[in-house]
Image 1 (cartoon, rainbow, N blue to C red):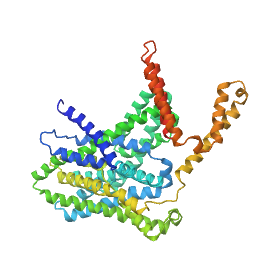
Image 2 (image 1 turned 45 degrees about the vertical axis):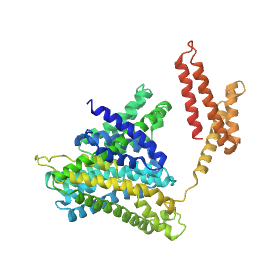
Image 3 (image 1 turned 120 degrees about the vertical axis):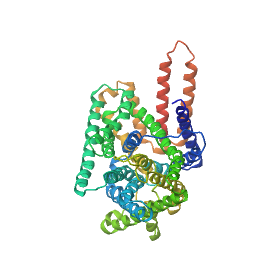
Image 4 (image 1 turned 45 degrees about the horizontal axis):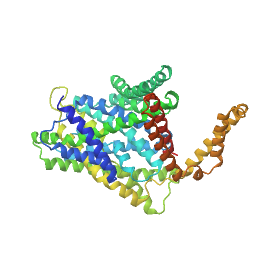
Length: 528
């Protein structure tokens, strides 16, 4: 423990530093983390990080999936459910099937069951990697929603494939009618369990006298409860988290107050950042140990690399082929949807699926699934091809992150056709929302407190405030120069409070309360 703890603290420090460096270089931080972990892993004398396969899903997946469910727009998911559903289920199955057939044909000792196991592991693209990469290029909100929705659901579909393949390998048989019933229970039961537990936790938040710390603590344990209970009932823990997380996300305003939402956002952002960073570092740090396992099985490193490159090429091609198939199916069967896509020329239409197919970076879920493969089968024999599957997974993650991750921003910028759905400009929508909000606020005061307005100076000032906002143009109300002046004023307020805090007769807690109010005001100014 004494030797591991400093190493873990050093890992977190390295994650923070590499993230800052990645931001400066304008590249996705998972790319630097994987490469750094790979380089650090070959330093002699470092402890080898090994996680119990039975715990890998339980440690990392629940909070990562729960956070994604809270971040995504359910309204956008419903809007683009056909595209999201096809990529999250049909494309994942097609990719897993392609990997299974290629692995069975080209890799000695790989049965179809092992091929499907590998396909289930490497088929889901990683949401964290894609989000980290596309933040440096501007893409439409509809595109972001499609990618986020796909990544949220394809984790569930790929892990169901992984689960069935694992059962087939462990038992040596696959009974179709039993598998179909099990599949239905995993899907329907998992979603139902997640919704039920989500509803129960919403009632806990509403009915118990919780405060911000207890609300945040509850949100941290909720995904683990959803996953654990669903798995105990032999259903899909992943679908339970997705369903329960989406349910709670759409009702966050009803059971969390503003303090819990503000503080919880910061806590979860840091927590997920550290979890993702650790996983991506582990990808690189674990590779030397996997290479040693290959040598112990007599598999040359060059041969294993060749298999990894082959599977990676299959992944990329399968996604690109699926993207073109989805485009042509939309044009033929859903012409009204295709009409919502703007194309400047025929070449743009042909480039769009290619760019979408290039977004299939692999990451956290693939690593977690690979590490969750048991070391031995139920009969005590070693799990077949485990080290090779782990190595191929690592190669696929590394190549897709580095090759696709570094080139994707360039492709998006050059093609200018990346899901160019016709959308109203965001600034126009924002102006319309603000205008409606100001009018609503002004009308509310006039309608409900009209009698008190004449005798209450405070209410008169509030009404005047909203009247001025309603009459002013957006540019006049808050431009960049005004915002800079106000933020500078807030800095002077902080300096004044810091000086005032030297007075021993003033309770410092009161000073901190005022500083917190100033912080909230500055955050508000940043989003105006």
